[in-house]
Amino acid sequence: MAKALNLSPSTSTLSLSSSSKYSNLLKTPTTLSFPFSHHPNSLTIKSSAATTIPISTTSANQFRVDILSESLPYIQKFRGKTIVVKYGGAAMKQPELKASVVSDLVLLSCVGLRPVLVHGGGPEINHWLKLLNIEPLFHEGLRVTDAKTMEIVSMVLVGKVNKDLVSLINRAGATAVGLSGMDGRLIMAKPTPNSAQLGFVGEVARVDPTILQPLVNNGHIPVIASVAADELGQSYNINADTVAGEVAAALGAEKLILLTDVAGILENKDDPGSLLKEIDIKGVKKLIDEKKVAGGMIPKVNCCVASLSQGVRTASIIDGRVQHSLLHEIMSEEGIGTMIIG
Image 1 (cartoon, rainbow, N blue to C red):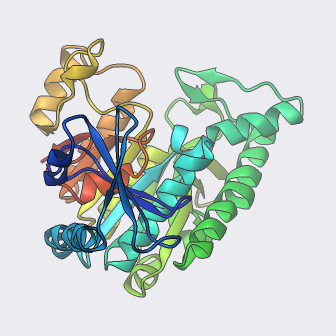
Image 2 (cartoon, helix red, strand yellow; image 1 turned 30 degrees about the vertical axis):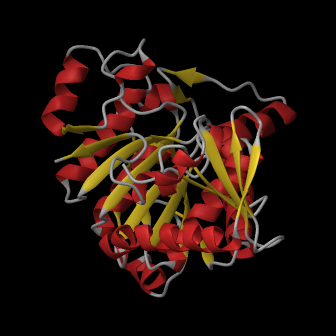
């Protein structure tokens, strides 16, 4: 795995974990911190023993050059390729994690990748339902969506969450375009088979990639809310993982990445150390049969499998609770979560 990088937009620092070749400067675990904008000639190493060792300007410059040069193979590998990211969970709720995701997306766009962001917004929906004295209801893990709830879902996802993300990305220096599945008939929805229990919860009937291609080809970042309508114009709330997978397949994406609140797929769900770094579709299905993958992880895994079967090269489930997890996944050999291959 390549060096673990930490690029912080809030403090303008770059840190490198003790797994790097610079860690021999200290015998204890180290973090290298380079404040780019405030003191361009300073670089410090902070150890777990709280000691600080200054490094010369020459060493600082060499460090920066090494970081850039070691990123080159990954930039070359993914330059011009479409990466679809599903954004949700803790990364959506915590400001520092939200800033991290936005920073990563802008950086990836700047070096030639073509990121597409798909988002849900469950916590925000619950917040507004509570303000309006509407009790959220769930059936088998899915939100029960009656007509009144559907109106709130559209208002929150399309009118608030989506536009907030677009604004953050634009402020960070890229050009984001906010969309829902209804815009340009980007996504055609259909009701789920158990619509009698779930109400206006939908599935993806089809995706029209011609709406997105001009945007990604011109270096824009589409930001897609997981709301769509059927042929008659009825709106539906669709699982954002499912939308991301179908969008990735329609675009022929190189990679699908799901940001989650877990480290990835665990061989033993009770053992955080049993993270599987890579697994194929056959292996995933075996884990499901053995009930090693269960609960909320099943639809995420099924979404990845469906996208791979439609031509997406790889799909990864990564820990959105880790700052700059997108960069870790794309700009390193081993990544940070579980990569599923066809």
